[in-house]
Amino acid sequence: MARTIGSHGPTTLEAIRKAGVRLIFEHGYEAMSLRQLAAEVGIQAGSLYNHISTKQDLLFDLVQDHINDLLRELDLALEGKADPAEKLRAFVAFHVTYHMTRKREVFIANSELRSLDAKNYDAVVALRGAYEQRLAQILTDGVSDGVFEVVDIQVATFAILALLTGLCTWYRPGGRLTRDAIIAAHEKLVLSGVAPQAAIGQASHGSDSRRAAVAGS
Image (tube, rainbow, N blue to C red; front, side, top):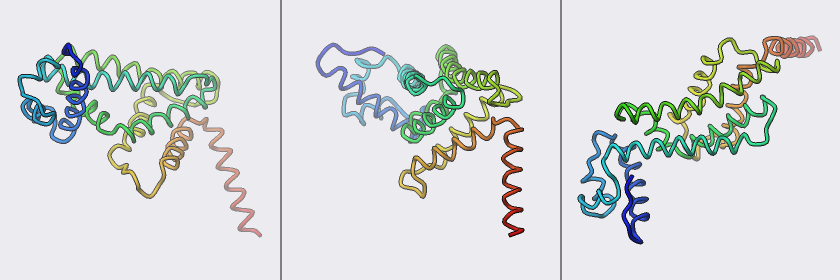
């Protein structure tokens, strides 16, 4: 993305990016026009080309930057954690928190993938693959250590990501549950889903025993 030379270049570019996120989220990439974008920012339509090359480049930059932020912040969240279960909890907490706070960017990165041209599409898919691989490696390490039981790493990776990202369709700030409660619920769902069956069986047996003791008291 080209920047203008001058004191207002970066400021205007940031305003264009923010307006682009808002308009694409509200109207969709195809429906948003550069004239509409310029009006939103408060500049002449022709002035946009001092800051961006094309509408396609704007979309690509927004999606690419989103996934790069996702990767960078995930690596920070996992830093210093060695145990697979601890890493998986950290992954879940990070992913859920990010998707609660960056809903517009997440929506655009998912729904407008189809609007990228072939070269940009391939670049974004590669970045998404790097993020998915972080989770796949955590699951692989957990299976190797005997703390996870996963039939298929790729299927489990996609299923977990679908579960965690799904909150974007229903989460609303100020709802019944706090963010911490929502994170805890997702951590429990994910961790129980990869726990060894023997451990689940033992937990179930313990619950049955407690219920039987209560019933017999």
